[in-house]
Image 1 (cartoon, rainbow, N blue to C red):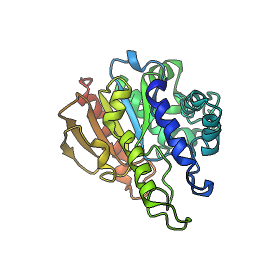
Image 2: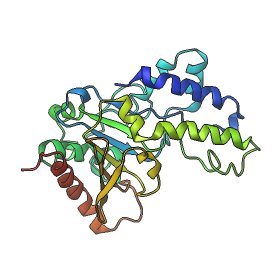
Image 3: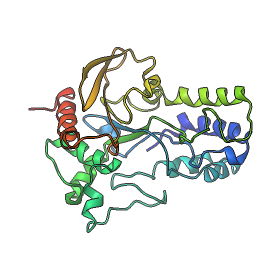
Image 4: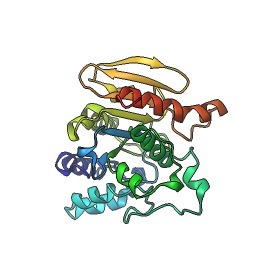
Length: 274
């Protein structure tokens, strides 16, 4: 589910701004809007998984087409179906399941969504279950999760940055556009849009986007090779910030230890541990 009333104006204004720069300077993917699955509001513990970028999202051209047809709701609906509880939906339309015969693809923990699926089921049940062994009850449980992103706009060299390699664009315009997007990327904005989560699990480079914590009164309470844990002064939410599953620098000990650590830490923070 997606808070259309909250995000409709944001997407519309972004599209207006985007039309002021040459098409060749547009990001390949359209803007990413955080969303919840169908049972988030009734979940006993509310968890948001937050990725690092939007590469491979809905095409910018499709977003702009919906905007020009005065149908931002269409884009928001498509946005909320790209990743489902079953997995990543490459065409952004219908739900689907992973091929059960392709167990490596499903269970390989360098893939973002299988990592989140397996972790969520453990946090909520205390049991480790391979994605290929998921049953209807596991997918039903996953409907209580939510999905966000550190970068609402695809990170592209030269875009919202130095613009190196692109034709000259007014720097004040770029600064304004960057500021407009960054404000919406803050976790405090996310908490305004949806029922405040009990836990946010960030899977992205640690320390790179600390601006998303602005206004929260974040306090680091634990830090090790696996993650940094934050408590917030203004909200009950706890934050676990770890590396993206595909991070190249991960050692064997990290790969083997990160899921058990985060799972145990999350259950403790949420009061679910025995």
